Picture 1 (tube, rainbow, N blue to C red):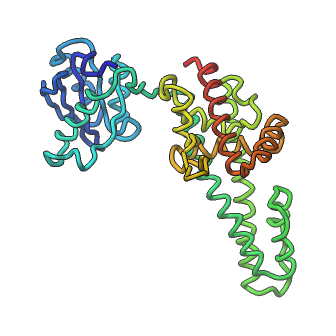
Picture 2 (spheres, rainbow, N blue to C red; picture 1 turned 180 degrees about the vertical axis):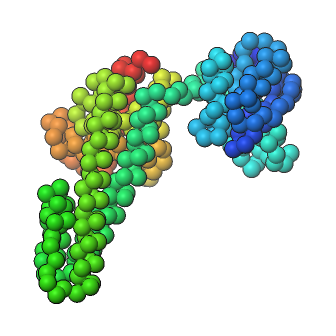
Picture 3 (tube, rainbow, N blue to C red; picture 1 turned 90 degrees about the vertical axis):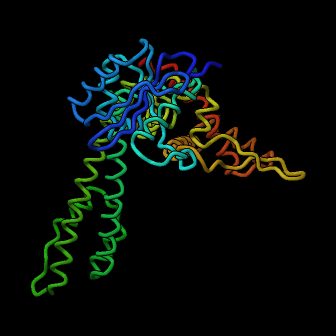
Length: 350
């Protein structure tokens, strides 16, 4: 298996920050060719491209940057537009900082990390587009859900400490109809200041919860459209909706990120972990991996657990063999990861 050092003319390591970036161009043998510090703006990116053209010993250049989705995103886009391969590198670990800590040192460590990569496993650079839009919507949905849950809990607690009519409202579901009814409640003559404030606050929370539900519905609609555009047919699979489908796409990312379906299962934290001892031979749940992806697979499996005849047959067979329900779910998540990995590889063309 070839290393990056055997297939490139030089590599560039970059340590990115809010205001400046430190760059080092390194030869395949690890020798420093040139160093540069640029501003984190358009003129700095142009300076970096001119510097690369001046010092590069050949056309095959790979750039390793920290923070290609944070401070380094502008430089990464400029380099990609110029036709250079940009890969993400991790922040150096403490045990690798034998020479101390500085921006030029970190840039060199980034270059050395790229040189040590296997060429066939070299990460493909992430590109903007539908996948990035899906990631943004998923992040927004997470925040909206947390806020809405807190508002519902706050409204129920508020009503619970009110009068008999208030306490009756605690038992109803927070549907749009009931939220509008709470918001339209009128005060009574001679009621206390506490009751007036409680009613006004309940009205504010009810309207906020209703508006939040509408925003979440719009978010889900946008996700459904983007998921269908990115991976046609993915949502046709039983249990895969706009949210779980979006998370599958974001975690899968692109062709080549996971070499095979076993790597995707390990990424999702659904690969079997041996937990055998003596005469007991079993596997346990995997607590590692991408927990957002794991949650998406869990939701898909729960839907199939309720609705899929094939899954019902598998559950019955597993219980007959003495398997517990958590063990059966673990196996189902593993099979689901294999199925959906193949669907993503077949349906995504960009």
